Image 1 (tube, rainbow, N blue to C red):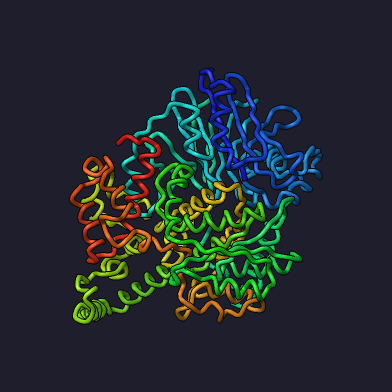
Image 2: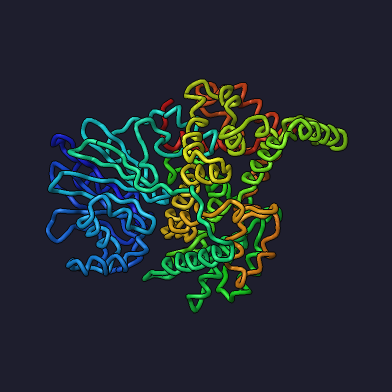
Length: 626
């Protein structure tokens, strides 16, 4: 993995000096500590690259220019099928000077033009310059594992891997995007094409952007998985096909000229990856993070898997003091990102980096195979409503909460609707799903925020949820998550790993697996109250599926506990209360009520308070104007 930076000139406007550009590129050193390169075509473009050397350490320097001087490329990420593609190009007469995947991508473009993207299997952000046509394309991989930010002005376009580098290249307005803030407080991150800054945008996952003569001409979607119609294949055959795909995806991600290992949480996805690695490597290094709080600690399960496969296992435990890490990570994020699991993700990346440069992770299993509890909740809600059971169900919920109030003083403020599923039962379609995702509802955001389009999050989700025009509710949820929720997870993975110069690979996000899962009937994924049915079954000879029959915890940190029990002693509460945004951007009474209710024990508002806290840290660090 690497860092890229570029500036395309419009109408011959002067580019920044090479020295100024080099200083901006230096801000990406953590993404690529091994090498630096800059390419300049005066009056047109300057491209920069910071390299984390993984493949062809000696010969894969970037920017890389074709032998005839026409094409120049910078690539952040990995092309896993580059060896097969190289053989294909060599058969057509291409001669290679390096062993790198970057050179393969360069000549694929020379041969196939924009269609070369359909051949790439991997994670990547690419900027490719065609000198003869004065043309640049900016590319982002299918699920957005690697970032690509950009800013367009009358002078041209500046783009790169991180927002802070863009600010260093050019004077860009730091005005807040109020619509993006609505998305943040709904989803806890800001999905593409929005960014927290009104003047900066993101290339969307599965898209490329064409810049012609210094102007953005269009953005084109090159990948869109198809969920309908379903393949007619029996479960046993499908499981064997999935196993073959899965083992190949893992095998391709072991190609490396530097040490490699895997994260191990003890959950389904990371355990299956370790099992697959054990089939192809003589020794597997694994890494786990746990917590002092036993409710969040899954180290015993990770240890069992490590023992079963004889891995070289390393683990560590983190405590409440680690919350201060968020101050450092905010600078790497570039915009507010409220998923608190970025903290343990950073620590497991740092732990792994002590021994390896590449680590495999389990991202993608839940999204592809229906692993989240919210999927099952929505499916239950659909069944309740479809069978005319809604009035009866609501009566039971009201009765249940009544007795909870009587028997437990801590639950005395619980009234229907009390859970996300309670809220979801009152609506339908994409509105039902957004109830399961949202942190602040539209009504709550209207009280908190005066500015911005309060209806944007629902409309944004709706364009994905309704796109398939399918009656399969699980398909609609998974399709939405591939383009929205995964974008948030990938920010976490990219920021946490690149902060310690670690390459983070996710076999279950191989687009072949995504397309295969999309083509499978929903009952192969969720059945009888069990999720990820076919994924667990396909590797049943390696790990008994019964090992995973426990409540899913997710990779979470005990933020509620770290937040403190007293408002007066809570650093988080103090940071929020003293910031200029409270009273100017956020309604002061609403913020005060959130804090008061939480610390008085009337409502568990820690997820909302955490989003406010991260926003405040980010706004201070980036001198945001609002």
